[in-house]
Image 1 (cartoon, rainbow over the protein chains, first blue to last red):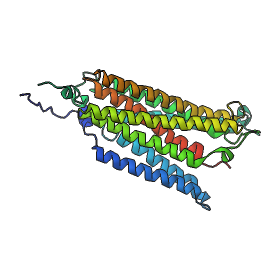
Image 2: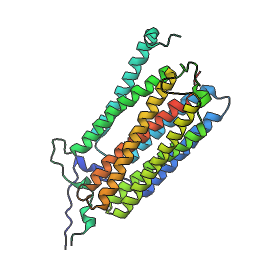
Image 3: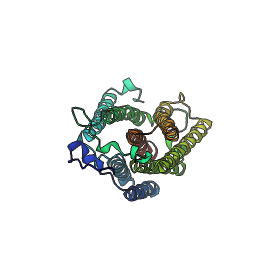
Image 4: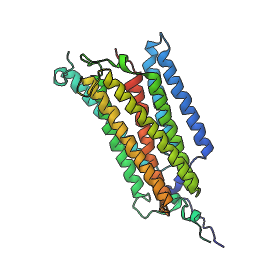
Length: 113
Length: 204
């Protein structure tokens, strides 16, 4: 008979606990509802001031849910989370630098009209 | 008795003899995905800068078909569910379930790509081309590179199915599925951003 060895938990093995398939389905249902809400507010007239903030909130919510639950960042090592967040932060830094450069020198980007 | 199922036991409980105690291939995948954030961040930034420069061609408001793209987005979002169910299947040693969910993911991915090919063709017929305007260039570069990533993902999923059928997804099978799953989910979250920023945020 094969014996089952129980290993003590290690930092790298906090990971093992992935959600159940049922939980994945619930996450997908929430994602579908958020997507429907996102498209719905696009068509609601007279909420121009809230449209872009609303769309950003919904997109961030979906992004975070997929990263935390489907990509298991909620359950995996913090090191993976740091690597990914570093990429996102750098992307925002690049975005900000590009925007600043282009708006300070619009003629360089051909957007001065 | 050793069975095929036991060979598929997830490596999440394996000890990794590395300085971090973590699997190096998974670490490399996360570093790659971090760098991909920069790549797509640049493409989306460029789109935001040039989306109002449509020249003599159609503008975003005239050309986008939001209901159609919403369905495509939903399809890609649901492919993340089938992908994670494929991982759950191999982690419990269910090879048949693994193949079913991988094929479902590949099918949803192909549906998304089919939709993108249709959309690109329609836009081209309506006068939007890669070299037509800065808006056209930025749009096709951002969405086209994303489509290329989805296509690579589909090929990797089909390769996994082939490996599983050939009995080559053995000891580190779950790790391979997990790595390709990470790539697939990343492609999904990039589309979450593209769908909002490129399609839904209105131009002035």
